[in-house]
Length: 542
Image (cartoon, rainbow, N blue to C red; front, side):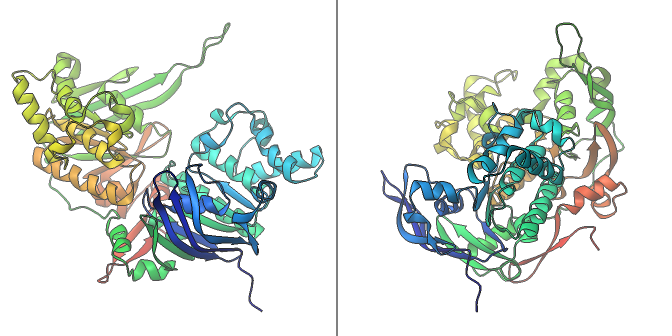
């Protein structure tokens, strides 16, 4: 006797009701009990909408126009609201991308974890508390008792995602839908959370529907995957089969966009560095109270970095390692408590204006760094406002030329940031940074929020511009796959200190520190074949 399917989706179609635009077209998939199943696709592919339809959690503007969703033999789409309330949480759990928006900021962790048990079980209060404490300990919360009275903002992103996972698994659902559960986390925490998810679900026999644009991560944990493009399911099969022998051009495009090691370049390290940071210490003031002065927190402990002309130095480490603080300190956005920063051999304060004209920064989220009231042309022209010896006409011409260089033609000049995609906005941010022809650029997680194919385009653009203009660059990232593609030299930070540094190949091939090895073990080494497929080999694993 064959085992009954846990979830069966047949010819599911969704439209935007007012405009009649079809956003999901005849999607079909099956999930077996205890299976880890993946849906892969870029933003706008319809993967999240299709999975939200499984539990009838679609936005009001989206309507189901056809198809059937069956869970444990029951038709979900015809269920009453009361039936759906019993289904959600108790039998189907959800973990979303950003736990801070899923957890109620005004409620303690204890109340939020208890909420589901109160709604779906008849457990007495003492039993509920006992189970919650056991689950918090199981997901790696150091002080479960203290966590019960704490609020979400008191935890890091990785800890919040663990708490979110605990709240879902307390009810032991038959199916867990994980929608981009680790996108906002650094590589090590991402792997820890995924390993925890797999461990918990296997122990309870829970099936997992994993939704992501991160192909290597999905490939590591799933047995079968489907690939979606523009609302349609274009390919499905076993994970190994799709990776090694992709049939659809879109799947091959996704695989070809994975970062690979860049070429080795010759850098002049004999001449004086372009940027030299010496023994940088940064202290953040502690929280003050009425009768007590706050204790300062040291973010950087005497860090020294040299960046030579034309060199791309990658600064890597987990969240809280101090890499962004160091980048902002070098840029002059954070004041150091002690230490010196030299630009072309001179103290940067000797000619602060010249330094700021020659030091530019590209931030992680271009939407928050671009003024929404200004056109794209105005945003790029603004970067040229203080450049000497250039008139208005010349500024406008250079702004247009720079937009062309980053792949945005004149037709984008009079648009506003909200009219562009994430990748296009990041191109605008890069255009603003290079318009002045700076000698030094700081890129802080410039591609972490982008889809895999858009990320590949932006990285190629960045490398081309760096070769053309020869600017030095401090490239800050937690994604070592990206670093392997763009960096000449790698500096590894942990807890505000540099623990290892060297040329890119040495760090990736023969890391000395255990922390560096742990970072590298979270990303795959790619072995491409002649059919456009890829074999993922996990680094530093026996």
